[in-house]
Each structure stands twice: as C-alpha cells, then as structure tokens.
Image (cartoon, rainbow, N blue to C red):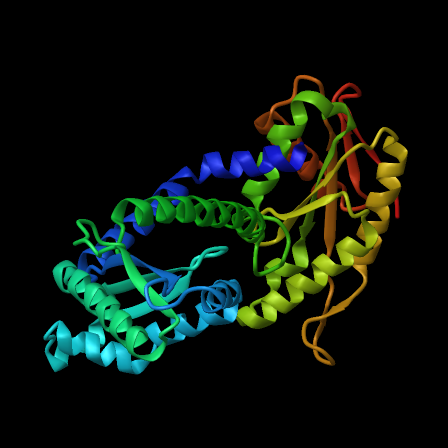
Length: 374
C-alpha cells in the first residue's frame, strides 16, 4: 500500500507528463494515418463440390470420400495462391503493370468446411473487387479443366468495400491513447524517482561551503530555527574562532586545502550528529544536539580546542602555523530564538577572547561563564 500510494503521488505531481505523452501519441498516430495510403479488402467464397452432373454411383461416392480429406481442399488453396492464377486475374482485370504490386491475392480454407475464401487487398476498392472476382473465375475455369471429379462454385461474389481496413484512425488513436497513458505513467514515476535523489543532492550541495566542506551559515541558522522550538534545552551552540587564520595571506587553493584539514580535525573530535558550519572567514560554528550533560559538552569542547591548538602545516612539508583557537558556547533556553541565541553566543565569544584560555560555556541562569582549563 505504501508503494502504491507513492506511485499515485508521483502521478499526481507529474500529471502533465502523462497528459503530454498521451496527446503526443494520439497526435502522431493521426498524422501518420493521414499520410498513409488507405488499403481496401474485398472477399468472396468458393464452394468445392463433387461433379454430380458427370459422375454417379461409385465414382460419386469416391469423390465425396476424398473430399473429406484436407489435402484436396489444401490443393485448391495452393491453386488460388499460385502465380498463374494471379497473373491471369491481373490480366483479366486489365490492371496496369505499375499498379500490380499494390494488390495482394490470398486464399484460405475455412475450418471444417469445403469452402475457400479469397481476399484481395489494394488501394482502389473497385479494382480490389474486380480482381477478386477475376481470381475466382480463373480458378473455376482451371479446376473445371483439370479436375473432372470436382467442381467449384461461386457462393458470394466480391463486393466493393466502402471502408478501408487500414488505416483505422479511431482504433489506432484509441490504442495510441492507451499506450501514451502507460508510457506517460512510467515516465512520471521515473522522473519522480530520479528527481528526489537529485533534488536532495542539490540541496546538500547548496548547503555546503565548498571552500571548507563545512555547512554554510544560512544552513546552520535554518537548523537552529527548526530545532529551537522543541529542543532548545538540549542544544549547545558554540563558536570556534581561529585567530591564526586572520594573519595568513594564502592563494585560494592553499587556503581551501588548509580549511578542509581544519574541518577534518574538528570532525574527528566531534560526534557525527554535531553540525559544523563556516561562520565567517576565521570562525566556525558547532551545533551540538541532544546534549543533556553540560559537563560532557565541556569535555568535548576541551578536546576540540586541544586538537586545534596543535601546530598545523600550511603546505605539506612547508610552513607551520598556530591556529590560536578561541572557543565559546551557550546552552539553548526555552524562549530562545535564532537571533537571541546568536546574540548570547557573541557575548560568550567576547568573554572567551578576554579570558584567553579554555572554552567558555555561558549559562544564562548563572549569569556568568563556566570555564575549564585545558
């Protein structure tokens, strides 16, 4: 049921694909039909019967017995389908040489009966009927001369058909509509299946700062706006300012490599559920979620500061710098908004810069920061 509901939602979202595909299929079919030369079919039936005029007695009984064998009927079918009967019928119908290939003559035996059905197909209904009657006449003449014991009679002469057997716009358009609806539904579902992962990847791509691979500031603010109303007291929002970066002047590619190594260090020290965003040129914001124990948060911040305090190479095997990290953090409050939380973090950051040591966790209810030495 879940899968079916998902497919129905995909069709609802992409209904225009289904409609466009169906309309295109019907339109294309009608255009092709309008450009296709019509084909008419004319039919007649021939009866195979014993020659009761010239034969009687045992010969008549023999002819009736052999007529039950399908080989006799099949022989007459082959006679009708032969090239000789076709040529003689075309000559009798006085058909031009250029038009002869446009007409097809075929014969079949009706099941469980000594009846042959002759069909002629071609672009002209009058010629098709005339050709069918000519083929029947030539066959009757040939059998009368070759098989004395049997005779062939014309049951129903061929009549001039009024409607073509091909193309059939109504039938073809109906089938095209059905095909278009099926194909359109498949395309709509495929588009939905492809679009969702692509849109998700695109959102992820737009959410990241490509220089450092951390999230963008706007993404972090959106996450705060989503999480604060229901879980503010379990959030710890921290700022990591790297004073050493402000003193560096590097080419873009070298700076990007350095920022990515810094982010890799931070991710090694933080759980995967913690979010890291580039806040400005020299600062990164860290959002810790579901942290009920503030002491554990301080321990985590201390490890992060210690890892960032180790010297780091600007280039591989080249210059080494100290990042001089300053960390500050605030605990979310029930009445916090994004702006109020950022404002309190700014206060905690100023205090951390004044202290010059250890991460500062600012408690609103205590009205003073808590600090822990490295």
